[in-house]
Length: 169
Image (tube, rainbow, N blue to C red; front, side, top):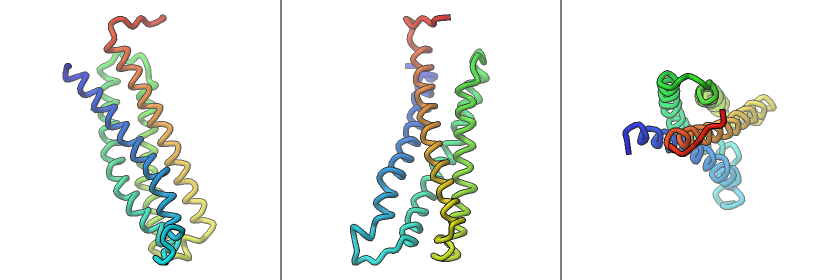
């Protein structure tokens, strides 16, 4: 197995880790954290408290996403420059991914933290609800785009490494 193939596989693994982390936060962690009161009523945890906990989880996730965004950008620019530059599709998808990651990490997360520092009343406003909903849409769109990126890169890797594959041109 050549170094080039190992790098391609490592890149797919990185994208897969991000997809898994986003799915884990959105599908498994958030519903439990935001419904903690129903599991532990004696704990006395409020929706505001749950939001504080979830923010701490997202701060950890943001670290992974931001490091990944830089690696995605480097990989995709190198892959594009070293290829025959026949398709902008993978590069475009991943530039969108990087923008979504940075939008989530550097715009929505700080805005949510800012509201949380102002207290529970600030997180109960319609403005906060709109901000939170927008951040959820960005998060879901990022999940979809990373998944699209994963399968695009997987197919391209299959084509590049399969000598029996014949393109229909």
